[in-house]
Image (cartoon, rainbow, N blue to C red; front, side, top):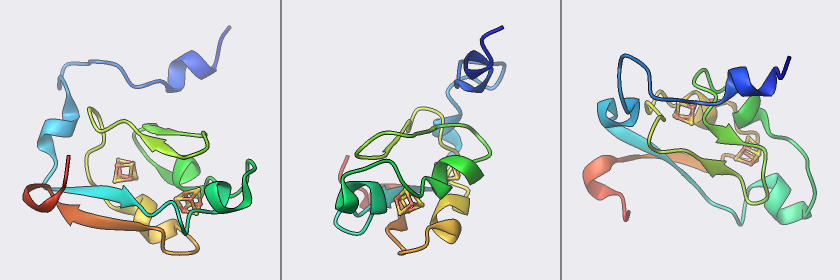
Length: 92
Ligand code: SF4
Ligand code: SF4
């Protein structure tokens, strides 16, 4: 059984749940540990995200189609590399 397949976000009854979001996480990659160290480390945002939308990649990537904007990743990030930004103030 491929357990990782169970963790991947997919369209469910709620559709693209990212549409529910009022605020979005924005990562400052100059503070994010994997990006600054150049190696797989930390990833607490991946660990704590209840939606499974954070990729353990360098740089860390968040799937905005499904991120609900709960802010848990920002709360758990040790160097405060994630800030929550109102959707209307976000660049993308
Ligand atoms: S918790 Fe913060 S520092 Fe750690 S990987 Fe995620 S964004 Fe980077
Ligand atoms: S805001 Fe919530 S849903 Fe979005 S990446 Fe962070 S922990 Fe996951």
